[in-house]
Length: 181
Picture 1 (tube, rainbow, N blue to C red):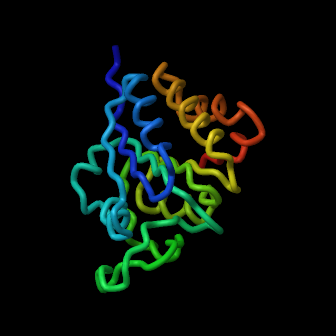
Picture 2 (picture 1 turned 135 degrees about the vertical axis):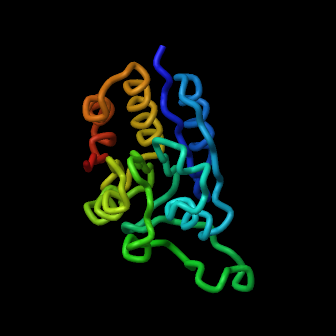
């Protein structure tokens, strides 16, 4: 049996139990998983900039987060708790230009409106081999179903492009996901 790649799940705020459903599904399929809930915006910055060594060992980064108007929703803190340069409010792709470091990673997000060419370019310029995300608002159940279907196909050794097509063609909602390579 082939060893499946390590998956790193980043759990954003207010996603309910999506990240836990994903973790359990992926582990059931045989993927080893590490999970990192975001406590503050800087947690996301540290991970995607390569400053957390454990995350560099994960082959696939799964960002279980919310997106709104093309921006990632991150935890909101009391004003006196933020670090001096820490982002306040939603994070845009422009705010992360030049800091993304994800060599060879597949980056997948369930965050609505993040599956754009801007976000794809950001992660691909940071070294990602592929970027996947939904282009519009997507129902939470459809996002969960898409990811589970994609990883089901990857667990049976399908190529990423074939697994993506299989997952995307499930229904109208899953067709909102885009793959950039």
